[in-house]
Amino acid sequence: MKKIPLATPTMHTEERQYIQKAFETNWISPLGQNVDEFEAKVAAYAGASSCAALSSGTAALHLSVILAGVKENDIVFVPSLTFAASVNPIRYEYATPVFIDSERDTWNMDAAALRKAFEKYPHPKAVMAVHLYGTSANMDEICALCKAHDVPLIEDAAESLGTTYKGKMTGTFGNYGIYSFNGNKIITTSGGGILVAKREKDVDKAQCH
Ligand SMILES: Cc1ncc(COP(=O)(O)O)c(C=O)c1O
Image 1 (cartoon, protein in one colour):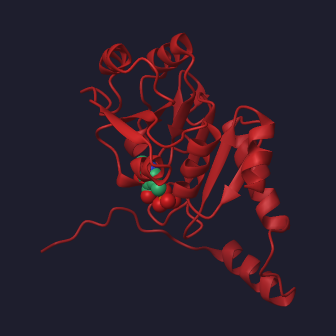
Image 2: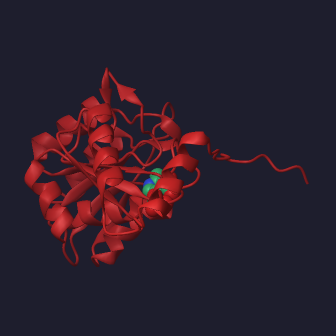
């Protein structure tokens, strides 16, 4: 059977130089200049005030769920079409995901279905929007609904680093946003993720968690 690779990462000269430098300076831990610079560059690129590099996008989502105050038995709205990694952190906190149907155009969370979900479950603890395959969800309507119900918005932008919605980077609309640097993502660190938050103190809190 002919296989079509999802994404094949490539490495270049600069990567080799950084690895060589890490050996020469015996730098393996803890976090250091490279990670600090990476965080600063991602924050500047995305237009976020600050961000925290983490071991995975899943870890960043888990911290977002915790920062949003999600606790056991809380309800979190999440799209029905996404990867298990979006939903798992909700379950890590023993909360209940309520799945919202997708719209045809973007395959992402359908704002009309989200509106209906708010009628059925008026007090979700958070809404998680996902931008699948580099396509932005309908942020105008999703943000407006979250604002109207005063519910924090988490953006799973694992797959959409560089995607803009009306000129603004996905991942920066919500209270919390995440990018993944897993091997099949837009750029990769082999494994890793980043959390961006609206309030700088949330990033500080995540780093101490
Ligand atoms: C939509 C989505 N959310 C979350 C994740 C989790 O990211 P990570 O593999 O870095 O934990 C991925 C990718 O793996 C993803 O595609």
